[in-house]
Structure formats: C-alpha cells, structure tokens
Length: 325
Ligand code: MN
Ligand code: MN
Image (cartoon, rainbow, N blue to C red; front, side, top):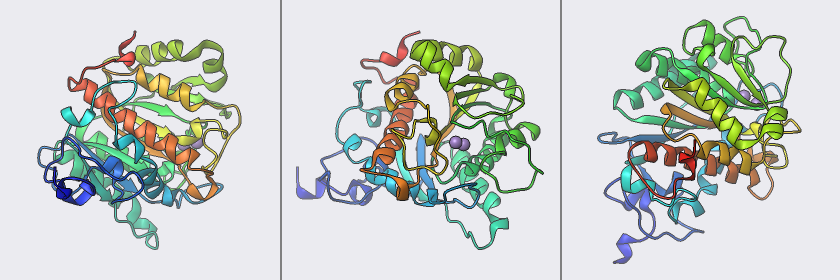
C-alpha cells in the first residue's frame, strides 16, 4: 500500500465503498471518512449536514452539530461495525454529500432550501441521512420524503412529542410533527414516538412509548412494540438526541431528565433491521453545551448504526444481534 492509499479518504478515495487506514487524530473529517462528493450515481446513502438552528425554543447551537458529529465519528470509521460484525461499506455505497447551504438571514428560504436538498438526494435514488440542526429541519425533509414515497410512518426518538399546536407557519422545533400529520406527510396511526417524557394533552393519534414505560419494560419490549406499530410501512426515522438522558447527551438545546441511556437507544436500534427506512436524521446535537464529546459521540454512533441497519437490509450479514425478534 502506498502513502497515497492511506489517510484522507474524504478527498483521495476514488470510489465510495471500502476503506483504507486513517490517522484517527488527523485527516479530513467527513462523516465516517466517506468520500465528499455531489456525484450521487450509484450511491445508496448520502449523508449531509443541515446546519440550521433558528427554530429552537431554548438553547441555540445545533447549527454546529454536523461538524461535531463528523469529528466524533473518527473511531467508528476504523473497525468493522459492532455488534453487527460486518463492514457496512462492503455492501453500501455511502458518501458525505457535504452541508445543505442555507441563508439564515432570509428565513423564508429555509424550508425550500432543505426540501430541495433532500429532493435532489432522493431523485438520485439515494437514502438521505441528515445530521442536524434543530429538529425543525425534519419538517422540510418530510416534505421531500412524502413527494417521493407518499405518506410515511414516523419512527421518532425524542424526549418531546413535537406535536404541540401551531399556526401552520411558525419556525418551531416543537410543533412540526403535528403539522406534518395535518399535511399528510406522515401517518400517526402507523407512527411511534420513543422516549417521550414531556406532557401533551393529546397524543394526536401517535403511539407513545414513554421513557418511564421503556425503563419498566426494557429494550426487547420496546423493539417488539415498534415493529408491531411500523410493520411493513415505509418509515422515516428521526432521532432527537435529547431522547437520551442529559447524562448521556448534555450537549443539546432542551435536555430533560429521566431519559434513555446510550446503551438503551443503541440496543433498540439494533433490533430494527428489516424496517423499510426511507430516510433518517440525527438532530439537536449542540456542541457548546457538550463535555468530552459525550453527545457528539452518541450522535455519531446512532447515525453509524442506522447505516448498519441499511446495510443489513441490503444483505450484509454478520453477528446480527439486531435480527432478534
Ligand atoms: Mn425534537
Ligand atoms: Mn427533543
């Protein structure tokens, strides 16, 4: 192997699959050292950042989430996936598509910019995996998803249900899923909200697997409930990092006590191979409140494991703990 075949895969690697050695502590920081490209031919998964946080209700800072998650992914880029035991890049063509360009000084352009960004990825036949940004970014993503796939199920990990009422127009990271339901982008009857520990007078037709219920019944029961609810539906998976307890995700805008551990969340994800995932995101990582990259490492692991689920769906085999039913 020559020195040209080691390090800086983000701009040196000529193809999207496989990997070669990197300095963990150096080199270009794409997500999982995937190649940075806007060429989506043959791409299965396009990872991109959506650095927008203009819709927060408390602490800002999630606009810096994509950068932090890419940096925190370096160790995950080195070994075969745990616990899956395969290299997802043997099976999947995954690229880092860069960041969605946004002009926060013209807020009226934000929804269209994000929707168009995701629509371009979908039009090329790739699955979008987005790194937020505050959770509002999932609303324009769902607009693009629904235009391609029709109404989808939503699998939503969060401390908050994000279904509070709004006027149909405001930029609010706590109301977009009720709006998405009203607009027919998602079907609450096939959707599931996981880790909830805030009150809303109505569930608006969603199934809630609250954090106290998960703590009482455990990972396997949670997996079973999700699989029963989603079934064969095409599903969009959105992971608000504040689903995790502040002990496991201090770096976020609206932390809530009593949440899931990283191990619980990853354990649940590992049981979801086979779901028909049309797209996914990891949002609300706000590095300014993080310590020792705790939150960014969790976000990177969740995004990495979502890629592994997609690889398993494409035929990757290994020690698939996640295939338990
Ligand atoms: Mn949320
Ligand atoms: Mn939340």
